[in-house]
Image 1 (cartoon, helix red, strand yellow):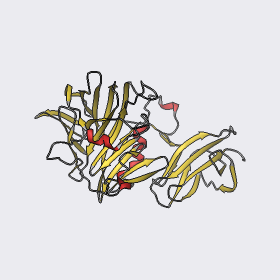
Image 2: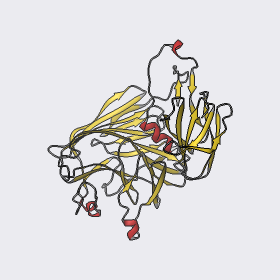
Image 3: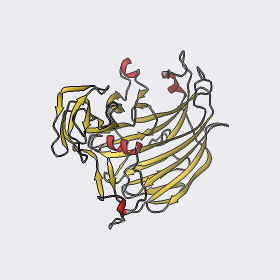
Image 4: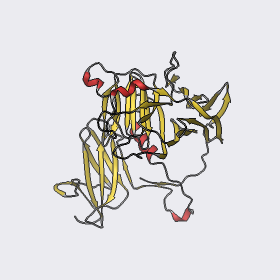
Amino acid sequence: MGYSILQSPEDKPIPCTVKIEDEFAIMDNGLLTAYIDRTGRVCKLLHKRTGRNAFKEDASEAFYGNQFVLFDDVPLYWDAWDVMDYHMETRSPITNIKAQTSITEDCGLRCAVSYKLAISEKSWIKQDIVLDACAHNLVFNTQVEWHESHKLLKVEFPLDVRTLNATYEIQFGHVQRPTHGNTSWDWAKYEVVGHKWADMSEFGFGVSLLNDCKYGFSAKDNVLSMSLLRSSKSPDANADMGTHHFNYSVLPHTGTFQEARVVQAAYDFNNPLQVMAVKSPTLGAKIMSYFKVSNPAIILDTIKKAEDRDDALVVRLYEAYGGHSTGFLITSLPFQHAIRCNILEELKPTETMDINNGTIQLHLNPFQIISLILSFDLI
C-alpha cells in the first residue's frame, strides 16, 4: 500500500498487436497469443513461455474458450437459491451473432476486439476482449442485457490441464473440489462457491480464472465454468433483470497457483492501480510504501481506522497458501505499539508484538487470521 511516481521507461515494452486473419482476430503481446473467432470464442490461447495452449482443442467442436452457454434453471423448491443437477442436461451454446468480432483498439500498449451476441429477442451480450502490453492475462469486459425467465447463463473454458481437483478461493483461504463424479459425494459438488479466482493446475502448468463479482463455479473433467446470471421468479419476479457489467480474466501460468502468485493477481484484478496526475513537489519520495509484507503467502487484507481510538489503525492479515508461514509486516508510519485483538477490536493484553524500526515479525498457521491494533501512542 503506497504510491510510486511513474516516468517513461527507458526500455520500451514489447508492443501489443492485433490483426484479423482467416476469420480470426489474433492478439499478441509477446507473452500470450489469442485466436478469437467471429463469435468471440477463444479457440487458442498460447502461453509463449511454455509453448502450451491453455485450452484443449475439442474434435467435436462442442467446447471453446469463452463459450457462453444457456441452461434451463427450474429448481424443485427454492427458486432463487437452488441449482439442480439436472440443469446440466439442457446445455445450449450461444452463437447467434449480432455484431461479429472487430478491432476496437490497437495502440501498442493495449489491443482490444469487440463483438455482440443475441441470447434471445430481449437479451444480449456485448464484450470487449483486452490484451495489454506486458500482461500475463487476457481480460473480458462484459455487458449483458438480461431479460430471461428460469435460465442460467454460464461461460466455459475447456482447459488443457489434467487434474482431479480444482481450487477455489473463499474468504481468507481456498478449498479444493473434485472435477469428477466418482461418488455421490463428488457428484453433489457440481456447483461450487468461489470468490475472486478459481484454478486448475497439473505439474508445471495451470490456468486460473479471475473475476470481479461472480461467486459460482463448476468443473467437470477439464471444463471450468463460471455462473454469471440467473433469472429466478420467486420471491422477486424481477430479480437480476436489466443491464449488468462484470469482468473476468484468464491467467495461464507455470507451477502451482501459489508459485504463480494467483492470489495477488486476483487482488490486483479487483483493485487496479489508481493513476492520477500530480505536481512533483506535492510528493516527497518518488516511491513510498506505507505497508508491505515480506512473504507472499501472508496477505494484508484490511487496513481500517480503529473504532474506539483516533490514534490507531487495525490491520488484518491471513495465511493464504495453506502452510505455516513466517514473515514481516513492514510499515513506514511511526507506530509505537502493536497488539493482537479479536474481530470486535477487543485487546489481547498478553499478545503485545514488538515493533523494531517499523518491522513486526509474524508467525501464521495454515489459513490463520490475525488482527492487530497499531497505535501511535500508548494503548
